[in-house]
Image (tube, rainbow, N blue to C red):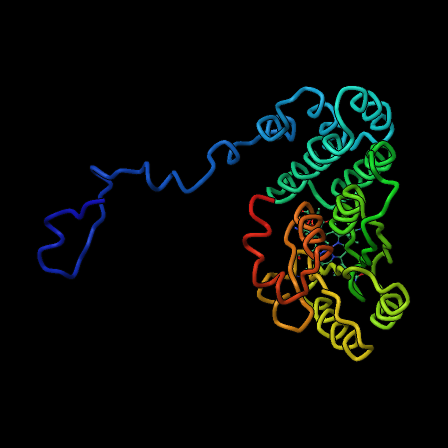
Length: 274
Ligand code: B12
């Protein structure tokens, strides 16, 4: 942008002129495609999986077709392996839903119905995951006391279960004392907790303290939108997992003997591309 030369002279009165300005850098900051008025179908088009089989499954979630997701998933399972149908079809569809929500194209009712649709599909695909017989260990999962958000936890539970672990899922809004009592009873490989609210994430340090008082030292994985790595690492026993697919990778390390300190130290290399 340039100043009109006559106005710059006395240094008091400025007039801006757009003459010669290069707007390409300014406009680059926005996704022009998403700024247009578009239908969910148009917006989702470039975000959906390229593979036709996965795309069809993802669309069932995206358009909340809870009545037809079953047959579509069963058809996909004839052509693709169940874990891929879950990750590249059902969860991929839910990721598009989350983006449409962030763009204010979808609202809460759509998120809820899409999640329900995804869960119906996951329940079917999960039954066909091979190698589920022999367990690699028990993982105790929950959403923090006061927290009703469990969609992300449910996705993570599927991933952990699918990679050969037994998941004991205590559900959502789990009282701290109940969680600790269950951990004492089961002595799981590790505990994972989900918090999407800043008001509920403080359950984790309290749980960690109580677990230690009971003589337990298994890692307590802090997860969910409200939690970041710094927070999860701020109390003893605490480790972090950001995305559901990272959890089985970390689980395998804990199974191999890593304690919470070692997981923290080697977190970057453990996660790698997961
Ligand atoms: C759906 C939703 C709800 C649903 C929850 C339904 C359910 N069964 O989960 C309902 C309607 C119940 C709900 C209620 C409320 N909600 Co709400 N909700 C959401 C919303 C829109 C989406 C969350 C979601 O499911 N996303 C999709 C999943 C897939 O993503 P995710 O949970 O983040 O999970 C990913 C990662 O975090 C991670 N992850 C999550 N868990 C785990 C676990 C493990 C082990 C691992 C490894 C990874 C992992 O992996 C996942 C996939 O990548 C968010 C907004 C948002 N953008 O997040 C608000 C949001 C979380 N809600 C919020 C609030 C405030 C509330 C209410 C208090 C609103 C109110 N005033 O009544 C109430 C809760 C009241 C109560 N105490 O009971 C706030 C929280 C703000 C804060 N930081 O504290 C948010 C952020 C909205 C906002 N911007 O204000 N909500």
